[in-house]
Each structure stands twice: as structure tokens, then as C-alpha cells.
Image 1 (cartoon, rainbow, N blue to C red):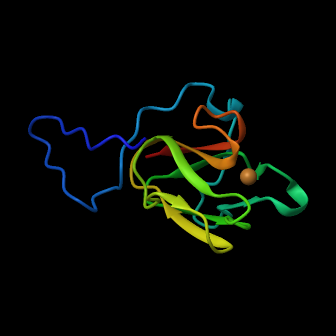
Image 2: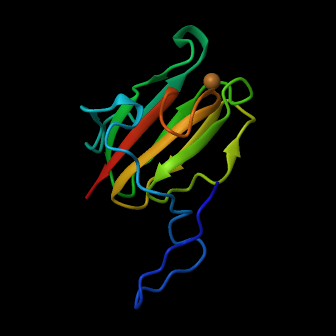
Image 3: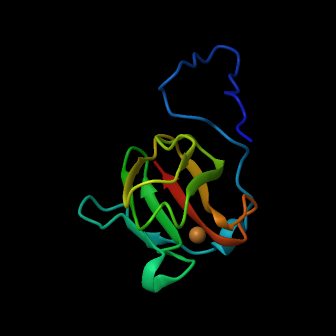
Length: 134
Ligand SMILES: [Cu+2]
């Protein structure tokens, strides 16, 4: 379940400044050890899932820069998308409708996500990881 903002003394936190922060992702979340580098300005930051891919995200392990957006494409009705762990983003709650969702990564760190029907919040099954660098 969602964990409320953890605010370090002296750091001002307010709604909308980066989404909900969850527990850090496990080092081997979704089995990701190497990442497709999508940090270049003109790189594709699209993650496809479902359909011909089956219960998979592609690319499953993606690296972006802070402030960049990733576009998830596929049926969220068949594969509801939810954050599992890690840094804040513009993804709130579970996406269970539509075919496309843009998620902006606002903090440096790991952002783990999963399909609530075919994966787990622990990163097994249909899950993926976005590594956000400065
Ligand atoms: Cu799924």
C-alpha cells in the first residue's frame, strides 16, 4: 500500500512536488541488472506491453534522466499499471483504462512498476524498472 511522504527535517514537501514516494526498490527488482539507455534527448522512451509481447514490458529495464517522461503503450484494462517501489513520479494509483499513459520521473533513483494482474509488487512476473539518473 502507499506510504505517505517521508519528509526530512528542513525539507519542505508539498502536494504535487513529485508524487508519492514508496519504499526503495530491491536491487534485483524485475531482474534488472543492465538498462537500455534512453537518456539522450532524442531517444525513444516508450515501453510497450501486452498484445504480441504477452505478459511482458519492453524494454523491461530502462534508464532515463530526471524530468524525462516515459510513455507506456498497451491495454491497461488487460494489464493494469501500478508503481511498486521507489522514487516519485506523475503516476498515481492504478491505471486500468486506456491504451497510453505518460509518466514523468521527477526524482533520481529507481522506479519499479508492475501489472496488478500478472505481476507482483515484489517485481516478479510482469514487472519492470526505470532507473532515473541526474
Ligand atoms: Cu498484465
